[in-house]
Image (cartoon, rainbow, N blue to C red; front, side, top):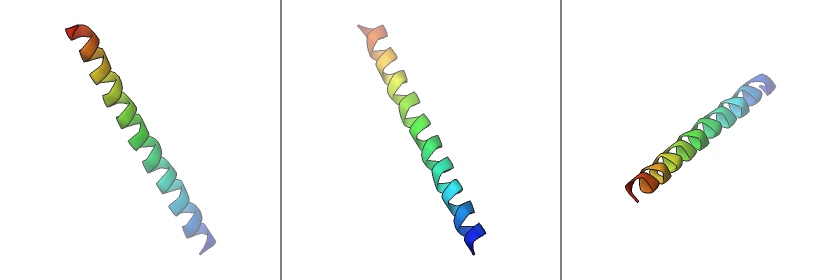
Length: 38
């Protein structure tokens, strides 16, 4: 049971990290597009 909980926590952290990366990437892309347009 403890092992399952540990695995779940790692999965959530991993998912959150990937999500954060995607958000930052898209934000940077939008910002660079904006500067290029200007």
